[in-house]
Image (cartoon, rainbow, N blue to C red):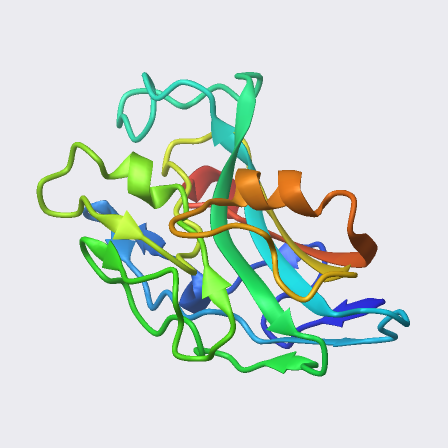
Length: 210
């Protein structure tokens, strides 16, 4: 199976229009366009009954002590954990394209609705901004669907974002109600016929961007 995108070039920086946050000289971070990327795929294996798309940042800091502090950087050697940005399930077997902006066109403070989408039977899981903003009165809420990159502006590591499409031998992922990427990955591992991944990078650290 082959996954392609006009928005995400494998191994290259992700344009800011697809990010949650962008650099700002005065405030370090400003909200960005947060547009969901386009994707197309081909060479689908016989027997495919649905697809799942998951986007994850594998370089999120494991501790928040140094995050977004002006007097220091988050050390590059700090242990990292996954931060899930998008979980889209029950993509129909005959579908071969997701249009840019179909699932997000801006930042939505206090989250987005879900898991149902405007495109049944597709459903979306919670992303990790739900936990990240849990203590922020202006931003807390349930963040379903796509929300793009916004790594710490002082992180000494460039973050890598993996967009993976899975072809499944089941029509529907057996999960109900609210769900997240980890649940989906656990449920589909025995049903994957094929997969392909695009990786893009993103940083808000001016030193690294330069």
